[in-house]
Image 1 (tube, rainbow, N blue to C red):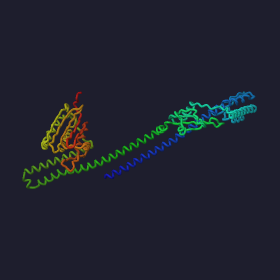
Image 2: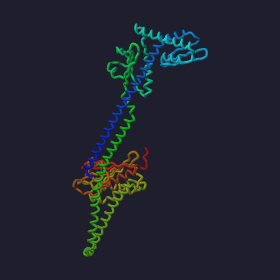
Image 3: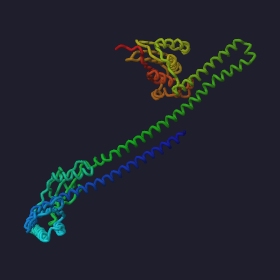
Length: 507
């Protein structure tokens, strides 16, 4: 895939993600606006219901003192053998009439309705006439008293109970699931004088922005008060009320963004892997082609009579074919080995390995190669416990790879290799240091990646597939160990292998 294809995909995905975030933010914003409008509507309705309760209570007080008593006294003056009870409850006037043979209750919203019900009832014409006249006379006298109070200014002043109003407000707000703290106040409708308030400071800004409704205190004079209520934590309440929507939206957007980022990383990783595989195939083709060509050439030479007549040349060409055949088999075995590691098909044999003995045996095998490059090896086996559990063959291959790399990537100076061991806690540390060409910091993070080879510019004197250190890391980790590298360009390289020991150190 070309680079501009990848960048086009990233651009499209970025635009899609930003568009999704924008649309979701609009949806949340509009949802909050709707919730705010519903909140306002519910609060205003609750205020109206509280105002009606206050007005009803004030009307009850007005009728009870002394007006219903006036009507009751007039009704009690009726000639006849009956008992009366007149009262005001929950917005209704209740009249109980007891005669010799029956007990009747009349309920109505006003006295005229009670009078109509009395006339319909079968109480006897005389009782009905006198009872109705008594109720209506009392009603007329009540109206007269209230008119005189209005004309001469002797009307009863309303008395408000702030605790009762608070309870009314709490009840109505809880009914509509608005359970956030609130402040309220009652002010005079004309002078804006504060009657009572729970605000720290009742200024004009609060009066202008708070929810409000009129409370009529006198139906005769038009006097009224204004009930105010404000919610200092309204915004946090609405956000909390929409918490599930906001949190779920945020989580899903975060998941999409994380998936988007992961997809981009995977795309670049796959592109890099594709490039490495292409380089690996080219390199492997060259490595396999060389021994095949050499074997083919040696075979052709053996067909010549002149060569067959010379026994020395025959032996020489046979050795060339044998060596190149082994080389070819080694390359193929290495590739098959990596394929097995990829499929997790390899099985490790568990046996006790003495690492000091293994390293000494390995140095014997590398003796000729080390002499060939005039290398010196220094060992410092200071670990007291060196036994580990693992597969002897694979562990041998691991350190063989590390020594092989030290020889391959030697500098022009005489090669020096130092092998040290030590115990740290319950682990065996094996450090292999060489004074070779080293590597940059950026390469140190990638050398254990499959197919990766440290770039050497236009110099291609080091053969390999970039599979060795990947194999080393896989084997070490399968033995529950770790491998690290420390290096400085053109100075040194140190591989540090950590393996758990079997013969535990007593602390």
